[in-house]
Each structure stands twice: as structure tokens, then as C-alpha cells.
Image (tube, rainbow, N blue to C red):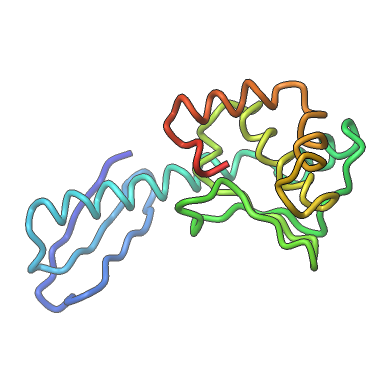
Length: 158
């Protein structure tokens, strides 16, 4: 993906990015330092790549297949979230809504499936107690996926 950065003296606070063809156009305030600009460019590039990867995966179909195979309830909705910075997924039990961090789209499918199973398990057992982990354990690659996330240094997010 090609990136074009435009500095603007009129832009004082916000950073804007849009994809035009294969070019990511990023507008930044003119007063940013080179390091700040670099950080914003990387943040916007990552956000667009995560969204592009996520668009290729049908979360509802994956959740349906996993629920059917493992005897878990299906969520009312399951969506990608670009706002989850410290969590891999979340589940609101009251309305059966599941959100999955879109950065997971770049991870192996079996890791994404683990996170989906983890969130579907909350529809059975809301807490992280022994009964909950027993439900998560129905997914045969659960320990492997947890190990993968731990190896990535992200065990606090699962």
C-alpha cells in the first residue's frame, strides 16, 4: 500500500486517513514532529490493513460453525471492532452481542476461532471460573491458541 502524507497548517488537532485506490492518503497537522507524524502514519496504516483483513472473514459464519460443532449458543450479533486495544474480544451477555478485535484477522484462523469460542462460552458461563474454562476446553486447539497468544506477549488480553 502506497502512503501519501499531507501536512496542513489549518489542521490543528485531527489526523484523517482515506484509501483512494491503492493509496492511503493521510492528512496530519503541520505542527507535528517527524516522530509524531511517523507514529500517526503507522497507526493509520495498521488500522486500514486490519480492516482490509477483517473484511475477508465472515465472523457470523465462523461463529455459527463453531457453535454448532461445540454445542454452544450463537450470539445475536458478532462484529469486528477497531476500538478494542487491550482486549481480543468482548461479550455482552444481556443482549448476546460479541465483538472481536479486528487485528485478530491477521492471526491464524485457529487463534481467531479460539477467541470466538471464548466469547461464546460467556453466553453459557459469564464468569472466568472452572465451569467457564471447561466450556472453552471443548475447542480442541484452546491450549495451543492460548500458548500462541502468550508467546506473542498478549496473555493479559485473553
